[in-house]
Picture 1 (cartoon, rainbow, N blue to C red):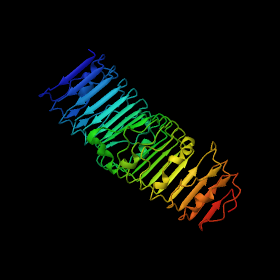
Picture 2: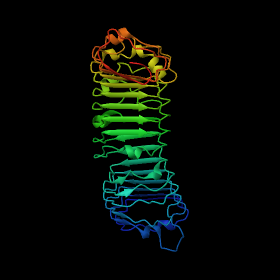
Picture 3: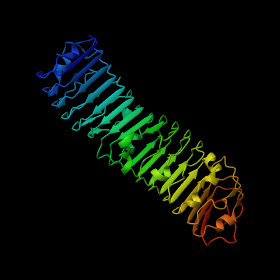
Picture 4: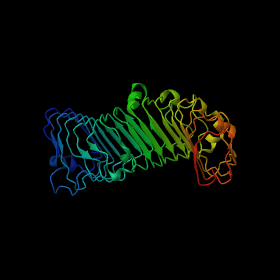
Length: 388
């Protein structure tokens, strides 16, 4: 026998010794209301087999309403287990198998009392956690995860530290986490996109205040339709070499955005239709050749709140003069220019229009020999490459 399903055994008080069936590959145990403990009886008598569940690949517990304790032997009883699913076990308090070297998918859903650590394994690819806030995400061994789904973590505010170890992450799905405020995805070289559920689940992002995505060189696009995060105030996208476009409808879906930076994203050609949100105060762009090439269409002059602007053009820059008239708004108070190897001059007429400018910093512009003197507002200047 290779597959077994035990279901609706209403008067069963303990599980049979299924661990003693050496050919069993798949087990599902569901709706057995009098099972309170899963322990030695499940594995079988000691000495019967050196290792229980010699062939087991899939194990699923479902709707075990009174199940409280899962006793682990930690004797290599699940050496071939590939899929472990524990669903709707509201009273389960612990624990989870730890020695599961072949585990590829772990799903824990609606187990709100389960206090446990993730299995110590480097083989896991899919991790699904729903209504199990006491399950600890801190586990170095799960860096192999490619798909991560987290749902109904009501108290979750931040899990940047945990995500930073998931260097193989390809897909991230976050649902029903109304307190999530800060999200940072860093160094996930296989990460491709965020997944945002449709319909009412779009309200997931109402508390999100900050999103940083960095070093995700296989990320190609943001979710179709944009990021519905009305309270997000900070967005940074760094070192995403294949990213082709910024989030759609930024001007309407991100109305609270104040700080925005995009750096080292060479495939981005333009801002989304409608431009940037009107409340943006701080904006920086660096090493984005195609985006800089289309700067006349940025629309920054129409941003009434923009005060600080930074431009780092990078080694491939071909700009000889900057900025063009009308490129920057009159509200600008601070201007940083860095890494423009071909820059020869600053446009005096354009700078004269910046009546609020108080501070400028110019670095690594070796061909820039002097600054215009006439008509400039009184300001401070700091530079290591030109005489101010």
